[in-house]
Amino acid sequence: MITLYDYWRSSAAYRVRIALNLLGLPYATVPVDLIKGEHRSPENLARNPQGLVPTLEIDGISLTQSLAILEYLDEMHGAHFLPPDAPGRARTRALAYAIAMETAPVCNLSVRNYAAHNSNGGITVESWQAHFITKGLAAFEAMLDHPSTARFCHGNGPTLPDICLVPQVYNARRLGLDISPHRRLTAIMTELESLPAVQAAHPDNHQPKG
Image 1 (cartoon, rainbow, N blue to C red):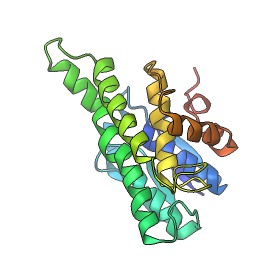
Image 2 (cartoon, one colour):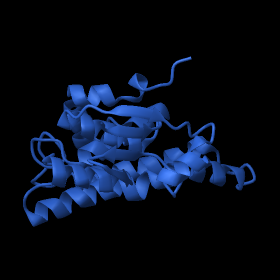
Image 3 (cartoon, one colour):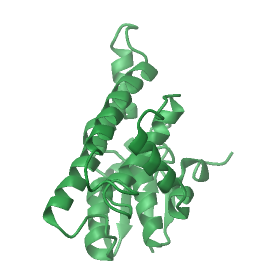
Image 4 (cartoon, rainbow, N blue to C red):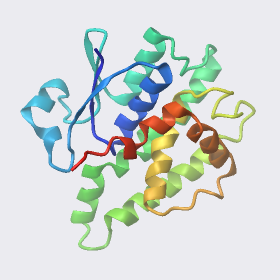
């Protein structure tokens, strides 16, 4: 049994849902409601001392941090999320990190709320996110100007950065940001969104009922 401790709109959890779906690995989800503060509960802190999601229980072990989980799936389950060559692995990691380590973290719930709360009205949650997502996606688009960019970010199959891109574009669209000027990124998203594994991971399919 694979268990994913998940929040439906968490970008990090969204990445892991995509990865598990791409591998065809069935899993059970246990919701951890970030809005209600369930990530700070003793139960969640016991499995994830950072008080975050996701946590993935798989192969008899418990894993945290989405990129570490993706690399574990690559190594242990033959996911091919990283290319076989060292230059290719370096490039796909750089693309993935540009989103998952540079753009997404500063837009996390705790960060954006802290910024808005302590800005004396000078910053809104929306303006904070829009600034960093716009900047991050523009840089990502420039990084895609590379011979290895093809149907997907690196070659003709989904790799680490594609899995990171999908949730970031979802967040951009929620804010009403126009990504259409980013030609390469938009074309890759069209390919990604045609995949059943990506469609099934969409937050709308994991929103709590009631």
